[in-house]
Image (cartoon, rainbow, N blue to C red; front, top):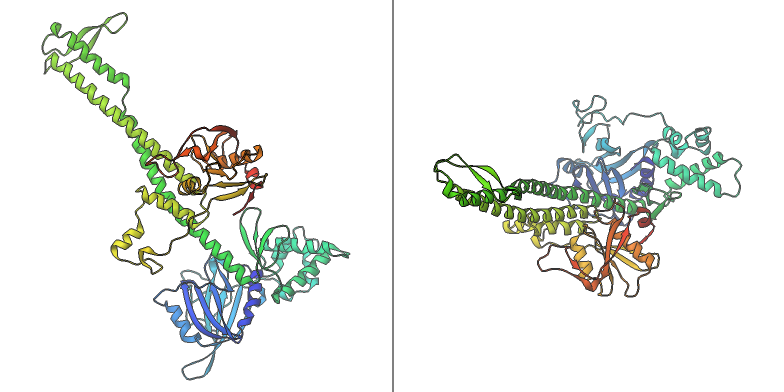
Length: 588
């Protein structure tokens, strides 16, 4: 959370001034939650010093807290529980928020404490300071071995983060903005360099917004002067919580939390910054959780793939050349045919090879410790043994190659994961295939409850949903994200007359066109493009895509998830086009 967004949040938090601290929790090691009774109701103040998610906001979230209270939490409860909040301020509009508390000590004397919330990325901290300016404790202590510039330890005098030579935008007039922007080649960098709390990216979005607002005004003699007026007016609205918070979608595909509506970006608006922050960080936490769990599943699949590749290599070595096997049988037959002419205990036998055209003499190595007849039987035995080994290795290699293709398909499915439900279905499939142990079953066997306290039968996530698109002709197209979802989409959520599509001999998603009549050519092309795009052939060209009526698609008994057979198909050749995919309307 940058200084600008922080200022909008602080404007909302001002409602806590005069409120009483009813409860203090520490859900995470670097996160605090204050329940404050103010204006006749309880408000929840969240302060996070997490390097990735540092912020201060009003929240509706109710995170679980550890059973055992950490030391810093017990200290906060000792000094701040039942205290009154005197003020909340953001010095210089920078990334530090100071919350002043007034409490009664054991002697019923009035004492003051200051909670310094430093929202500074990896340097974020939450520091409790007494009325004399000395540190009581902090979420993150900084010792001499960690920093020689600024120590944060109990009983030391608190010192603010190193000051910067910048202006406070909250106190700046239009003339101050004009002085900074005049003749500046890069207005965004000029704003960021001159004013506290403005990162270059946020400054660029803010400048674009004010520039667009300036153009919309009926009269403006000087563009930069008008933009400067807009900037000053924006900060007045910001400090009075009159701007509209939103979550904006960046051109790169990422999302950003903003205290204002940006110009030219798709965004979702919220009534308060607290609500926007709740959704933004909830979504970010879910995405991070999905990334971590996806990485863990990916490791399992990669390890299984490596084991199979080693097995296939061994099978290839075990599969000797068929010509070499035939040579063994050939030697046995020639020895048997020439037993009458071979001397006992010979080291080799020179015999006429009548299989060649024209026949010619060859030399066959013999074991002189046994008779020529026994040598013939040894060659026959080696042939039979080699033939059985070869046939077994061929079957095992085919099984391993099929399993390898299946696992690589699962690896492809991981890239389609968009929710916890999507990932859980892939993980459950791995459990059923014996590649991952079922943790819930192990907990049940040990008699341990699950994290939600309901035992191994805790609440389950709802089944994931397929991608849903609308074609150019207004027809719904559904795309499965994984094998489990493919089976459900094809056999439970589609009608026999719907059209089913899949890449030919390439792992990919099942695609359903929900339309019983004749499919318009454009819709068929778009559905085929989706089938090719959501497959292992995404980066290829001229991808064959089969399509047929869903009633011709069958699932063989005992087949793996997602595996089907089909008939009466026709084939389209399509090149996956990401621009075409993005142009389609996505309904979920």
